Every structure is written in C-alpha cells, then in structure tokens.
Image (cartoon, rainbow, N blue to C red; front, side, top):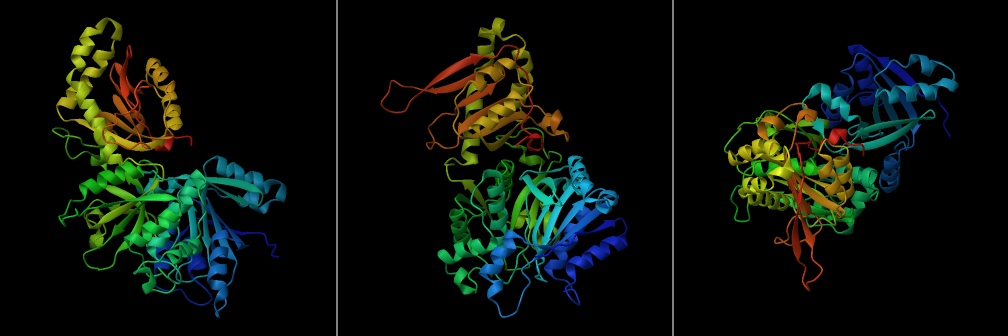
Length: 537
C-alpha cells in the first residue's frame, strides 16, 4: 500500500512547461521523439498552458480502473513486466501553494474553492506505455475557448474527480490515446463514445479491454488480420458491431451514393451539425489523398461563423455557419480542429468518406426525415397564415405584427432550420425557462410527449448569425416523435407565430388516426433557441 502526499508544481514559464512535458514523455532515459505520444501530449500542454498561472498536482501510484482492466486483459500476461499503477495529473488555473503547503484541515476546502470558481481544469491519467502515455484526459471544455472563441463543445457532461478529500467537478468529453499494442483508432473512438454515454446516460461501462472483447466476440475479415484482433483497425461492419454491443444503434452515412456517385460533403456537414448538436459524439473517418489509410476521429463540437449566403435558400440549416468542427483525434490530441476545407495535407471534411452516428436504440426516425417533415408542415401552414390571422385578428393581439418578418423571410429564402434530438421532459423544461409567451408555454407544457423527440427550430438568417447565442431568436418550431416509424405520420405539434397546431391521436378508429387541433397564442413573440452551453443538465 502506497501512502505519499501528491507532488505539485506552479507552472508559469516556458521552462516550467518543458519540465512538465519531460515528466510525461520521459520514461527512464529518453523520449520517443516524433511519436504520437509526443503529439497528443503537446496538444494537452498547449490547452492548459494558455493561462497566467497553472498548478499541477501529481498523484503517484494511482489505481486507474481503465488501465487496471487493460492490465488484467493484456499487460499482466506479458513476459515484459509493466507497472500496474498510473499517474494522475490535476490542473488548476490558480496558484495553490498556500492550501497545498498548509495543514490537512484546509487542503480539501482550498481545492474545492478553486473548483467552485471554475478554476479546476480537469485531469490526465498517464499509463506506463511510452509511445501512448495518455490513458485518459478529462479536461474542461472551457479550455477550447481561448483557441477558438467562436466554438462550442456540444458533447459534454460532468465528471467528478476526488483528490485529498476534495470533490472536483469538470464538464467535458473524455479523450484517450490509441495504444497500438492492443487497439486501433476506431476502438479509441468507440471508447470516447462509450464513456460519454456511460457518464451522461448511465449506459454500460466499457474499457478498451472490453471493447477488444466485443471485437473478439464477433470478428470480421479485417479484424482477424491483426493480433490482437482489431488492433490494426476495424472496417465499418466491425465498428458497427462494437457499437451495437454497447447498446447503440449505429447510423451510417456516406458521401457516396449506392450507385457510386459522389454526393458531396455539404450533406455530411449538415448531418454532423444535427447529431453533434444533439449532444451525440459522431465517429468520422478521414482518408487523406496522400495516404491510403483511413483514420477515425470523434466529432464533439463546432464553430459559429458567417453565412456565405443570406437569401434564396430552400430548406437551409444553421450548418451554413460552421466552418470548423472540433474533434478528439487519438493521434493529434483532444479538441483539435477539423476544418471544412483547406486542411493541412487534406485533413478536412472534404476527405471524410463517411460518418457513423451511435443513436439510442429506441430512435427509429433520422434527423433528416424529421427536418424535412418540419419544413413541409411549416410551408403548408405558411400558405394560409395571413388569411387565418385576418379571420382571428381581434384575438391575436400583436402576434401577426411580430410574425410578419418571419413569413416574409420564409418567402425570400432567408429562414434557417436547426434540428436536434432531446427528451420530451427536457424540451418542456427548457421552454419553461425561455422567454416565449406564457400562453404558448401553457399549451406545450400540458402536452403529453414521448421519451425522445426531434425538435426543429426556425429563425431568420440575419439574426441567427449573431455570435452571441443569447441574442438569437426563433419564431417557430416543430416537434416530431423520434420513436415512431411511418413517413405519413404527422408531427406531434408545430408552433408558428400566433398559433400552435397539435395532431391529437384519435380514439374512434381501428387504425391509428390523428386529428388536427389549433390553439391561438395572443400577443405571441419570438423566443430563444436552445443553447447547449446554457443547459443545466
């Protein structure tokens, strides 16, 4: 049993950060120059070193659950002996010399006070594998801001570390580095997805060793070409099998149609925007022109820029604002940039032949189908909106006046959609905190909703382009059941300025039927779109 007080260091100068890099990279005598281990470590240091002062606390002999699983399954069986214990490095954007040098009465409170002020930056677990030292990196998504101020990490949840009696929460999505001894980049990508689902949704826990067991359980022709199976890569079928073993329903989307024609990357970008914007980590495969190898990364966020066009668009989405995606790349490191085009050596979305979306098993409607259904419902209602408003003018108050700019923009092709997956109760909880009119809130909050729904929000391009998400407005939205098949089934409801339309299931027919109900919303007004960084959950 080891009982040692953690070491710490206050990092301020370039020499301090060079010392830390050597602490991570050096193992015994020399570093492995130019390895992916170097590259991922450099990315991590660049993220945490952009602050005036950082304190790193180093836990020696840390028993990490992930590496313990890998040790039992692989390293503990080798002739060459590997240490079972790991190191864990905690980062704080504070000078913590006073609490760490004081007595134990104040250490925990000092660390927790720093975390309460948002100064805890997360932790990195180092395993004794020289060319792949990063077992886990759980670093705050706020570190992305200084490098990409216009970006947001869409896939994240709260992780809690415990150090010297203190509980230290950090909100992020975890990263792991590919260990070529027993895994591939696709397995590292699957691990990122699985760990997020486990922490956020209490789904099964998977270590890299258990992912390898999933590959061994039902290997394909590609997986068995390496030992251990899959350690040199998985094909699409093999990766989909692993995701199904995790309890997920993988949805495959390619830039090549079944007849071999190139579809283009724009549809892929729109799909990434929908699914990543829903908080779902998406596996993207990059195949650069200069290499025949395919490489898997996990898309976890995106940037928000300027629209290339502001008129004449049909069924356009807010994906037009995206020029970069944020990815976890097991070779390059966490929170790296995958540009829309113009990437170095072809590292961009133009060279992504397909993506795999690990959807919940109960989702049977694609985001693209739900969005199309929402557009069709909006366009049908837009045809008679002015006449309906005129007939009900005395009861609508200022609703027609507030809604007129939206329908003028719709006619001019300046309306954008944004579609995301959420649960029924979370959708209602967000609306309750929104600035929407109380009459609209009342009608929606008293509706019965399924567990999972697709929500499509509609706004005007000029407003949605604003860099501050709290300044953006939407005028309409549509809700579609994500758990019910059938292209002919109507949406659950759609709100347009002045009216809420709901499709109520009829009870007097042998076959499922729906009846349209219309509710007026007097003095209706625009309201806020969902902003993931403002979500409490």
